[in-house]
Amino acid sequence: MRARPRAGTVLCAAVAGGWLAIALLGPWLPLAPTAVDLYALFAGPTLAEPLGRDDLGRSILARLLAGAHDSVLVALLVVAFSALFGTTFGMLVAWRGGLVDLIGMRVMDTFLAFPGILLAIGLSGMLGPGLGNVVIALSAMSWVGFARLARVQTLAMKTRDHVMVARALGTTDAAILRRHVLPLIAAPLLVEATFALAGVVLAEAGLSYLGLGAQPPAPSWGMMIRDASQFLLVAPHMVVGPGLALLSFVVAVNALGDGLRDRWQVQR
Image (cartoon, rainbow, N blue to C red; front, top):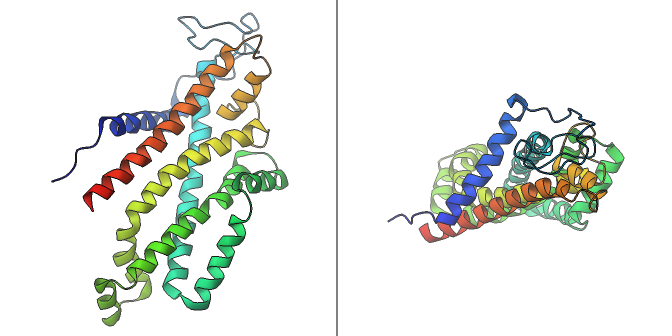
C-alpha cells in the first residue's frame, strides 16, 4: 500500500511550484519592474503596492516577481546542466572501472578540494558579470554531487542479475546504462536535484549580491537584497520582499527534497 504524501510535503511542493510558474511566466506578466516614480521614493507598503517602492520609486512587488524569472530559471539551468554532465560522468567512470574510475575519482576530488562558492566566485570574476557566466560558474560547482552519487549507485547496479543477463546477451554498454541502470538510480538523483536547486538559488543570490550576477536594471533577488541593504535604516521594507521570497523558495524546495527522500525510503 502506497504511503500518502504528507501535508507539509504537498504544501512545500505547492510553494515551489508557484515560484516556478512565476519564473516561467515572468516575461508575459503585466509587470513594470523598471518603471521609475520619483514622487514615490522609499514609499512604504500600501494596498496598491503591498511591498512598497525602492530608492528609485520602482515597485518592489513587480521587481520581485520579475526577479524570479532570472533567479529561479538560472538555478534550473544550472541543475539541468549539472545533472546531465555529472550523471553521465559518474555512470561512465563506474561502469568502466579500473584506471578510468580512479582518474574520475581524482578529478572529482580536485573539484571538491575547493569550496564550491569560492570556486563559483573565482570563475565568475574571471568570466565577468552576467547570468550566462553565472550558469557556467555554478555548474562547475554543482556537477560533482551528481557525479559522486551516480558513480556509487552505478557500482551497486553493475552486479545486479538483470544487468549481468543484459551483458551476457550482448547488449551494448550504452543501452544497458540507459535502459537498466539509469531508471533505477533516477529516484536518488531527483532528490539530489531538489537539494541542489535550493543551494544554487542561494549561490546565485550571493553572486548577484556581489555584483557578479544579473546587472542593472534587470531585477534579481540577490541584487534587490544588495540594494536594500544600503537603506536598511531609511526603508527597511525594501529587504522584506526579496528576503522572504528567497527564504520561502529555499525552505520549500529543501523540505520537498526531504519529503521525497522519506517517501521513497518507505516504498522500498
